[in-house]
Length: 171
Image (cartoon, rainbow, N blue to C red; front, side):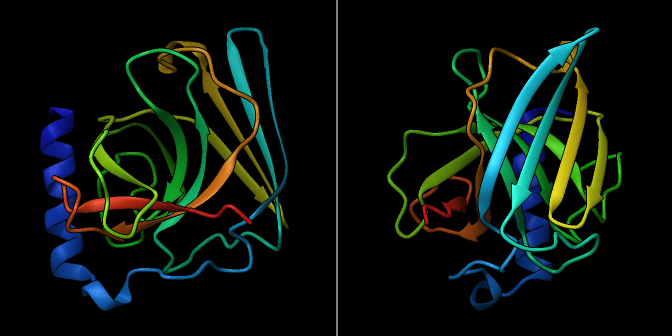
């Protein structure tokens, strides 16, 4: 399945499941990053987030955390949850990961526009209190990543060709 098709399916699913007013305009208490780290070894990369509050295992929030690529074809490696939008084989109704391409389009209210998402990237994800750890094989990453994670929400945005953007928590 192509990433363009995946983005189209995500938009269509969100349109039928989530009314536009339900998109986030503020952040949940856990959607902030107090500390983050990336480490590598034995063919794996480990991402760690310490969030502002307890990270829920299940939530209706459409969002997550992301690390920007320093190079490569993708823009962001994201660990995300968007219950009801099944775009992943791995844990489709819970936390899972994507490589994401953001576009150069000018969003109306989002920080950036979502262009496409990866088909499937598998990862080991654990959540304990306000700490989230993600282990992913280096072969699933598409470039080198920058230290420093961000929290985000997925929002509807008419300025984005896909209809979807990300709102990054800058506080």
